Length: 359
Image (cartoon, rainbow, N blue to C red):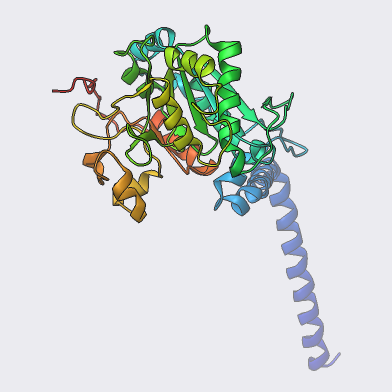
């Protein structure tokens, strides 16, 4: 065998030995560390599964409305999840004794003006947020829906029928609920109401007085009228007078487009007074626009000549015990609910204010 062939064979033997050594080392490592690799694989698999499980949330993170519709009941082969709901009441240590006492003493019926096409778009979010804090919540629509449910008023939809819808709604409330509540509030399905602040405001008034409260506008009616969008609340006596004395169309319009103005004329004609809802510091409680407008003063021109409180703006113009805001989207209803009832600054404990006492 010549030297050239011998060198060639030596290289082959070296390569075969190297490969055999690598294989032996690999098999030995697998046998020794098999449990560790299995745990790592399992952990990695779970991490990947969790990432894919969160992918639907990534797609909808920009829209709270989609998040609210997202039903987190999907499951994988190794994991089953429950609905996306966080009950953090056990983490809150709020003393709500006063609010619960007022809830028993100041019974508020809320009826919400809605329509068949808005039940799942808007009205459902009223039910899920502020509406559940009413003593009684009724949804008034043109037709009855047993599932939602709604009360059908047998009135066509459309702005030209708003007055008729309101008239029939209050009459229905009178016929079925007048002895089950003390105050009777009308709101739209895009109105947000803080019931605790409403009850605090109403506690010093007598429900047997003919009065109603809301955001006061000074146009069209001698004593003015109250914004429909901001919501307004009738005393029991006001409801009784409306149902018993407001059936004459010469006294109270039965049909029309401007529901709040028509109700204002009716209230004046039957001797129901517009009550003052401004707090002790001269700040507003009922608001016909979104909070941002009242903070920045982004008002339309007509508002400056209508608002009885001078069309103020800024944080100093809005009561700490504000009651309502209007044009609230479904997303913002849940945002407001979160900020009011869940978010807390650590170490700051708010004391009660006496804002009903006018000096």
